[in-house]
Length: 220
Image 1 (cartoon, helix red, strand yellow):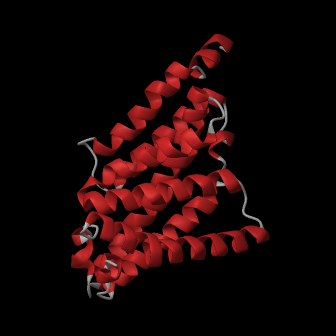
Image 2 (image 1 turned 30 degrees about the horizontal axis):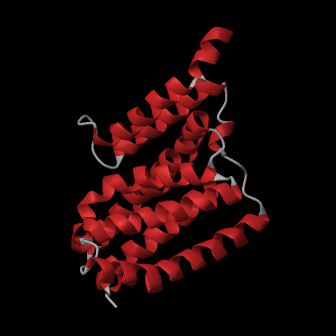
Image 3 (image 1 turned 45 degrees about the vertical axis):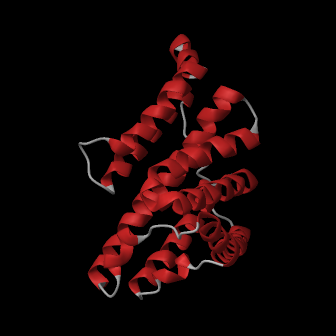
C-alpha cells in the first residue's frame, strides 16, 4: 500500500494526470458543460488516490474577512481588465476578442439563465479546479515550489481552450489566468477563485444579455 502511494505521488503520475485532465475537455462522449463534471470527478478521484485526501485542492471554509477579499479583488480585476487591459489588447491586436458565440443570449432570458448555469459549472467551478487547484498541485509536484513558473504554465493551459475567441481573446484569457493564479497563491482557497471567476463571467453574460457585448470590444 505504501509503495502504491509513493508511486502515485511521483512526478511521472503528475506528468500523466495533468494532460489527461486537460484532454478530457475535448472528449467526444460528453457535451458542454457536463464535460467539466467528468473533469471534476477525475480531479477528485486522482487527488484522493495521490494524497489520501483533498487538502491539496484547498477547499477551505470561507471566513468573514474573505468576503471583503473577494469583493476587493473582484472589483480591482474587473475594472483593470475592462477599462485598461482589454482595450489595450484589442488595440495591439488591431481587432477585438471574438465573443460572437454569446451574441445569441441578447434579450433571450431562457438562454441567459441557461448560460449562467453552464458558466458556473464549467468556468467558475470546473476551470478553477482544473487550472488552479489541480494544476498547481501537479505542477508543484513536478517543478517544486516555483510559483511564477506554475502561474505561467497554468495560465497557458487555461487560455488554450479559448482559441475560438481569436488572438485578442486568447491574450485576455492568459491575462485572467495570470491574475487567477496569483489570487490562488495569495489566498490559498479555491472557493475565493471560484466566486471571483463566477462574478466576472456573470457580469460578462449579463452585459451580453442586455446587448452591451460591444463594451468588451472597445479599441483605444
